[in-house]
Length: 106
Image (tube, rainbow, N blue to C red):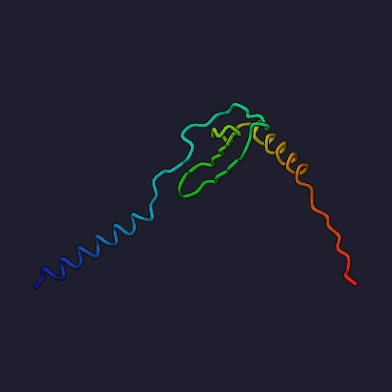
């Protein structure tokens, strides 16, 4: 008689342990190593900045080049803010605001 409640208790404890382990994630940073070497704006296809999270304890900056190569940049790289400014200015010039005028129909 004592075996069924004990078995049930063990099974519930096991389920709770498994459920709580699911909440923990392994260190899944995308960047294993980073570079301090500058990247030219004309080579950049995309920039992804991933802030500190439960998945990775550090900020990650991943630049995808036009060639498809992905480079992880050290967030302390002094040239990175200049690259961002250059790309933002370039995007502001290449995508002007659309200005449309509408006239009432008579």
